[in-house]
Length: 187
Image 1 (cartoon, rainbow, N blue to C red):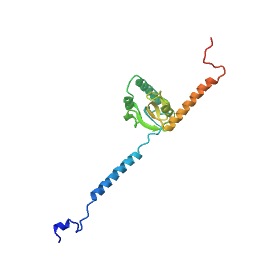
Image 2: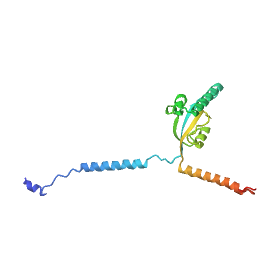
Image 3: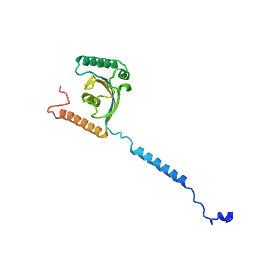
């Protein structure tokens, strides 16, 4: 056996160093980087056209004129009450026949274009945000609708801008192109 001082001079093979903790730190660092990359690349795209609305639905039997009249009277009364300042959310919870949205005060959440029916669909895409609709009838029943938010994709924004400019061009071009039209008034 060698004396103690010779062991430190490197003449005896030293035991290999334990590098496990460094390997685990490297694995954890790679894992953290992977999580960050996944979160950044899989974020929900906000560039989609969608609308958020709330509604009150009153169902009726389409084959029963009395039931239809009852439903129409109720929805008309609810519209008047909302117009007089009562809470849309409270009335939706109390009266709406939509089991999904009524517990949420009538809130339907966000929907893309084409997910609603007929007049309901047309209303949510043209109505001013925050305005209460007239009574809207669909195959589900009578609705009162308020659009709470509308998000347009960049493509839809561009298309609407083109339509607006075309409409402005037609309206101004029509007035200018009429023979004998003048902005000055004659005495």
